[in-house]
Amino acid sequence: MWPLSFDGPTVITLHDLTHLHYPETQPPARLREIERRLADGVQQAQLILTDSQFIADEAQAYFALPAERFIVAPLGVAARFHPRSAEDIDVVLKAHGVETREYFLCVGTLEPRKNLALALRAHALLPEAQRQRFPLLIVGMAGWQREQFSEELRQALAAGHVCLLGYLPDEQVAQLLAGARALIFPSLYEGFGLPVLEAMASGTPVILVRHSAMPEVAGAAGNYIEPDDPVGLRDAMSRLIDDKTHWQACREAGLQQAKLFPGSVARGSQPAPTARLWEVECEFFIFSRRTCPTP
Image (cartoon, rainbow, N blue to C red; front, side):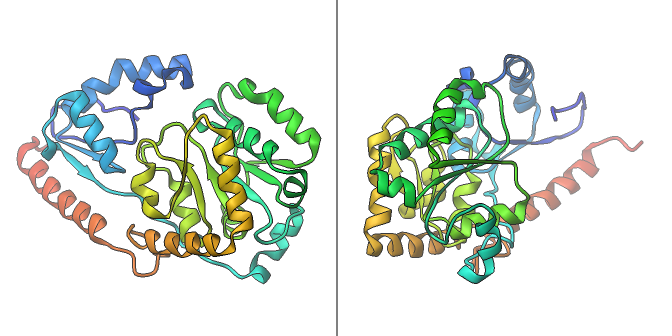
């Protein structure tokens, strides 16, 4: 939804600047539309909401705008993402042929920016016994240019250690997150990285790339890798399999990190960003009433 032609004050939400860093991961028609409209929309807006400080800083520098034009409103986590007992998720896990804490999970659209090929390559590097005991489950709908890694995916599926589940209802995704050994999130670039927060709130460790806004979300709870290093990802997976003390420490750190974000399920979470946004919305509404012509 692009800013409309409107003479009054406007507020827009800017989720990320993927088109600047990874234009090759965007469909050409979408890229053209972003390049045609985004700069004017940002310059026109009186307030720009972002999901992370990283995107606010990046946009401020790129568009040469003052910091006071930006409001950082971090995403929260839905109530369905919370720790669950093995009994609570047994039916869903059995339906997908896995046991509690004995699988790795990827969540995301099958498209180049999500970098799922890295997860396939790293999982293939695990010893045969670990690949068999800890399969890789991929949840997400097919996206643009999935064919870039379709051959790797086909081979992994044929080997029987990777399962492509496609799009699933929200509750099933929440249960799978709560039962995974770890979430693997190797995305090249994110304006926030919501699955990372959802996994931590569910009591599941996260493996992710130390790029863009993702360290802002995971903090010290993340197991960080490089986006082009399958061996490093394999080693992170192996450690979460073999080192139970490390796994438990990551789980506890993630639960604490999730409390820093607004949301009904992260017990003890901080409401400050949401409260600040509400305050700004009230101020902006009053300003709009004073400056916009009466119809």
